[in-house]
Image (cartoon, rainbow, N blue to C red; front, side):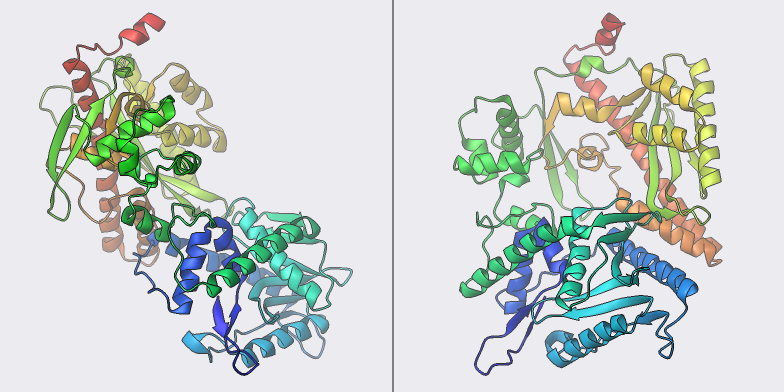
Length: 557
């Protein structure tokens, strides 16, 4: 969104919005009003840290669009003004207005150029520019159909259609109608997997117009008010997850600071007059168990409860910190299997944005990492990586992993495969179906309880004084001085690092590629070691309480 000087003397500047603004508002009204305040000069644009995964997604989205454009050019050829055929490319207007935004004359000129290209009968108009005085947008593709109508096409890297993407398609269909050009009744998303997802325009236009009217009314009302939008204003929806929301959650000690707090539960607490994590911790015990659980969590996070234990540590920046924990009276520690010398600790590394150059299929599980339980006290755990850099290698790595597990189970019949959260089980099922191999082996592992999700044990057994129960947040409890370090410290960084590895490898920089791959291996090995450390720490909690692991499992068998 941006402002244009009014054509009438003495009138305030006019707000120009885009389909992207509607998408943002549909997700988080608070965020879009913060951005409006920045345009109005009421607040300074925050310097949020860059998101490497989002930047990579954007780059791949641009490449996806260029690939679709190249296919249209191959089919129809470039624009031939004499014949009135081919792909017409509407070059963006220069930024002559404030903050680099185009001025009114430039917007109108590009709008007229785009409409002219459509009326001239171009087979495809790429980046058609629309401007009706309020709305400005650039449609990815307008494709002429056999009957002469133009269908709105948009490229999205996603594997399935989302409502927010359909809003953008409807915006350009609405602009065609305003220009007197009848749009094709079907709009199309060209998804990242190459699928063309068609949708009836008449079904989504009402939703678009409702969202547009809501946005305009909200923006108009807010401009008339003298102050910036306030966090917690009940008139506006906040997602609670974006950078703008996350900043305010901390500043206002919002209920969303509480680990496990859902937007729906927060709404009920706000209606009851409870607005902060401190207020939740201080209120009398609630009657329902869900709220009591959140109260226990809030009390740990605010330091107002008596924990079962405290661990002091030094964070990556060198600051002294501590984490506290409490063990639930009704815990599931007895469900932990008895430790076995053959136990292994497992973690996947996958890149959802990797694309098979042959099939166009997305996603690659590029590393299946395993740490073996030391066979004797004080022994060093052995790390075994199963690498894959292509679809064929992924299949082989999966087969090799299953063969390794089968051989290990022969030697250690009571061994377990420990992991944290559900991804490993899901990925194993997916690989068995995709590669039509190992389905029986995976089913056996699941049915016989060989795979043990420690997140399930944590969730039903302990509370910690962190706002998240990710493995990384738990590590100060049991990793001692060996806390994470290095460049690759989370799953998102691992994905980006793998993309950098592929680029370095394909560019012939073998030393750089090897160094990046070693960093990814270190990260994966650390995750496996962390899972081992967590299992041992949980066993220690059980021993302190005279809880013998495996007893419940024995009684159920």
